[in-house]
Image: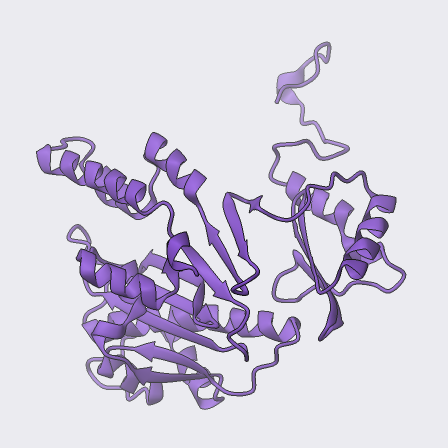
Amino acid sequence: MEVPYGIKNAENMMCQLNKAIYGLKQAGRERMVQDDPRGVHEDRVPQLRADQCVYVKGKKDKYVYVCLYVDDMIIAVKNTTEINEVKTALKSAFKMKELGEAKFILGMKIDHNRTAGSLMIKQTRYVDDVVKRFNQEHSKTVLSRFLDNPGQQHWKAAIRVLRYLKSTKEYGIIYDANNGKVKLEAFTDADWGSNLDDRRSVSGIMVLIGGAPVVFKSKYQCTVALSSAEAEYMALSLCTQEVLWARAMLKDLGHGEVEATQVWEDNQGAIALASNAVYNARTKHVDIRHHFILENVAKEVIKVDYVGTEDQLADMLMKGLGTKRLKYLLEASRIRTKAAQH
């Protein structure tokens, strides 16, 4: 961006914009304020506290969900009467282009199977772009360490990543509408000291609703864990944060959850620490920021129980696995190909 031509002494001046310009970090926020659906109807559409880009009106069989992302919008309703009312109100306030049934948004392809009562989201197009540009997340962080002096093994690893992406691009997450009651559960795991450069561990978490993942993360921990139990406890802290958000989201959407959310952990030491933080020589140094787990266990917001390593779904988010093991975890997480959807 440059100062308009003709202004003298421009290098010593600061200019103030009178309106947002496309491309600035503030532009998305300003567009959201302008497109805010709450003022469109006579009866205001409440904005969710858990996600301010989602608006909900009505309850049970008569509801309207409006999901806004800058200038892209998805409207979900139970019947066509409701959606026509929403679209009419929006068109009266904004210049809007209707694109029909949602099939592709934010890099995700949406496949509906109304016979089976399921919906599948996948990122085939994004994977194709990744293969072309090799802008892959976890593998990029690992392989980029060897850019100064790459060897044959690093080249083979990069090719293997691309081959894996290309062979799994048709996989997607399947959400089933016929699962009955909305069930929230989570899996958390950690790979202790896996980074050989600084010995930091990797946290892997997966939050599922109705048996399908809605949150999944693989993240390096900020500090070095001195034991596997400590690494797992730090991963559990991250998982608890995401569970709290998911519970708030479900509550705002009208799915109040009374029971504690089940969190599955495969380390007995971390489970014991989450249930009763006994301060001893091995655990007294653990950062207080992670101990809010205890508070949520005591308030019965979460319930941490043991799951065997073979059934730990978060295992695939932290380490490389064999084909048989990976396929088992993908199937258990409802991550499948379209052919397996039916």
